[in-house]
Length: 111
Length: 113
Image (cartoon, rainbow over all chains, first blue to last red; front, side, top):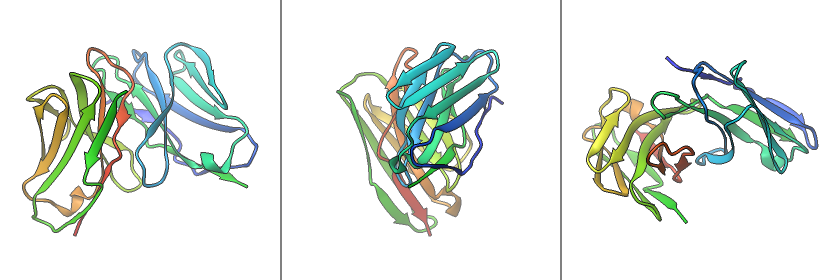
């Protein structure tokens, strides 16, 4: 069964620091990768998508993809208390096209 | 722009009672539609997905069912709820024909008592 693995955390960082969230996946043919943010009691919202090896930057967020290592990460620079949430990694199954979600990593940004 | 709505937002139902959650998508045609469940402290579990009217695929065996009576309408049902059906139910959509990003509705909190 294809899997997406994340450390459940919580990951605690001070305000202004860089938060690093990591995700590994088992499907070698996956081509599409996503990071969602989910505040407590709310539905997930898309932060970033990445399809090519390397880095993709959007404001304070940077997604990093290494297909050879089957590894995708999300960096949040200048972390703010409002970034405190659960971050879900999702990988598109290369055969079925469905998204497979990790369990999520809870991030706590302390003022 | 496309929007997705689901309702009700919250419901408390007794064991053995029926369930109906409804979801509609606006601003697009022929979307792929999904029902996910998120149990407390756990990840997203895909329950059903649909690529078109009347076309439903079930991912896990359970006492839930789904229907798609119209292109942009997706309904999750149960004839008799179990305690284990409690959770956060999410409707989602993406574009058909190898669409990538999935967009979620607001979610429905179900507590079975």
